Amino acid sequence: MRDQLLDAVERLLVRGGVDAVRLDAVAVEAGVSKGGLLHHFPSKRALVQGVVERLADRFEAVLPAPDAPAGAFALAWLDASIPAESPAGDTSGADQVPVALLAAAGGPEVLDVLRERYDRWQRRLVDNGLDPAVATLVRFAVDGWWTSRLLGLATPHDDLHRRLRALIVELTRGESGFARRADPGNRDFT
Image (tube, rainbow, N blue to C red; front, side, top):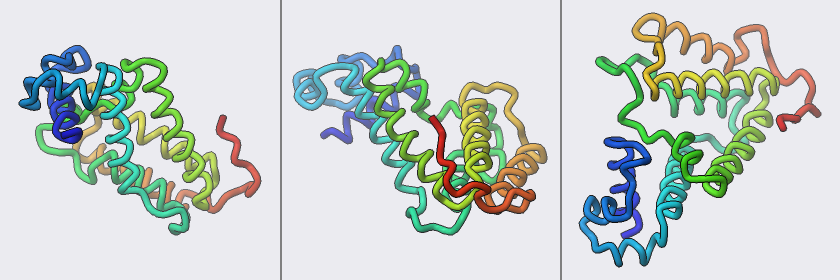
């Protein structure tokens, strides 16, 4: 039942954004009573937090294990966020749930869930053998690109899409002149 409710929230989010997520609308979308919904999620914030946690779990499931080869974590970040080719007709990521925007709209408690995940993911990025600055640059580039796709902000397409993605892949493989970690003790990212 929880997944059925969270699926309904995701559909509403894609169609109408955070404002579309109302308890009565979620119950109707999921085909359950409002009481059934409230049994699992006592508030809109709890629903939003459930979606944020589930989306973060899905993302984390495609990331490699901590013992992956150098750069594998940064490459997986790219692969999970940006397709190899610009999808035909795709001018935004409008079919995706905007997890960061959703977390921010859910309030400080929900945003803290995403912050905790990002802190763990950042530690894994910098511990995966690339120079911490390069690993962080890859994350920033991918997150910015993903946000640009989501909001339809001058998103690169076709050849530019492929060329930008190839540059990021070069960074994750140390082919850009930035090889392994320059300072093994430098993990500062806060």
